[in-house]
Image (tube, rainbow, N blue to C red; front, side, top):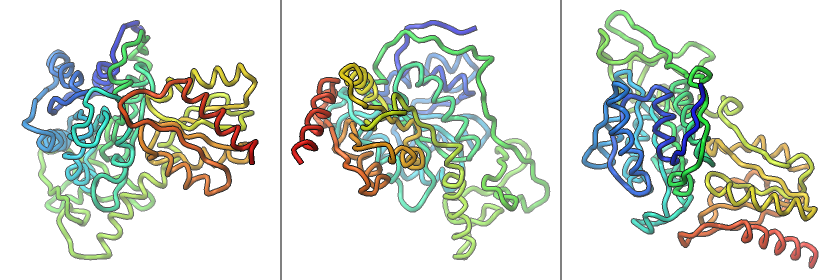
Length: 383
């Protein structure tokens, strides 16, 4: 049966992760994500899981990767400064193909900035924070209930594609409390990682059949050992100096996300069928956009909302499919213009792309958005 609860976004992240099968959490307290660690400390022992408070964020992501390699679904949570510290091991997880979920509850920065204030300034860091070319999947919820359901999807994608998945929350959603009706657990779709039990001395633990992209995974501690490294490696997991093998490996890592974009990418559209102006937003900013859209529609304006739920890979195919009907695009986000760059790249100069952002630790209001719509409309008439 479904449950009706008053729940905070950070609490929903934990409950959704547990529903997805998460049984290991390692983390370090940092505002505004601390409630995730606190709730895991309470809930995981009740579910037969393990909670460890680590000495810092570097140790946290390392412990999560180790737990996942043994077969446990694992998660950590942090905010911007800690997310920066995790980047090297996120790259290690991508190269070694270790599934896990990293929750980043974004706050205003840079540095320690405004720890309790909202921001979406880690959008580009989620994609480009670690070094080298690597696969990236990042999802961003807009409500407490969606936090619960979407983090389940984050675990499903991590297990399906054997890669770390970034759960890009923000302080607005993380600290919001809403009445939510959680879905019946029996209706949830939960992915389990594809398993393989290798025989013989040469385990071929990264063998991928022709035409596929993701190797099956065997956890440590179940009868066999194999090599895991962040170096370019062959199918047995051992380092190589061959440019041919390295190129094939890294190409496959990228392909498993890029060539499955239709499966990975999801968007939410509202009033887009006849829209002439599209407001592009993500995460907690969606709340203000919805109210502004309602008011604009009541005033007879043909405005719609286009929200990437999967923020990486950016859903350019879905946005391009709308360009033929639009006259302009307005990007609204709590930063200095990060998703804006992806929207402009996707639009490619075919339409005017305007921007409304905020970096002072306060929220963008529906009135701010309506005023920006009026401003851009007036400038078009003046031209």
